[in-house]
Image (cartoon, rainbow, N blue to C red; front, side, top):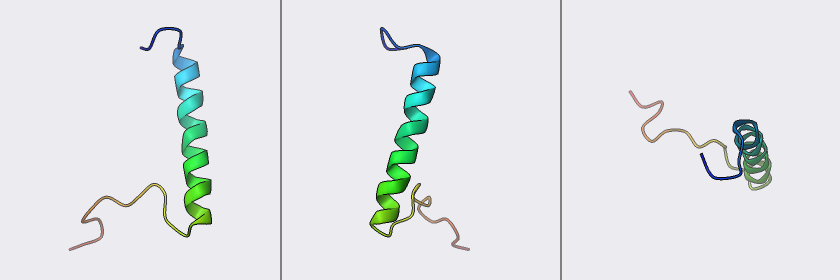
Length: 42
């Protein structure tokens, strides 16, 4: 674990980063998270 970071800090950061990424990608008309390569094929 990075020095000075608690588990709940990291979890909160990860949640906020995912929310941010989702919002930005939605503004650009792209799916987030990205589908796995090859997903849906077959």
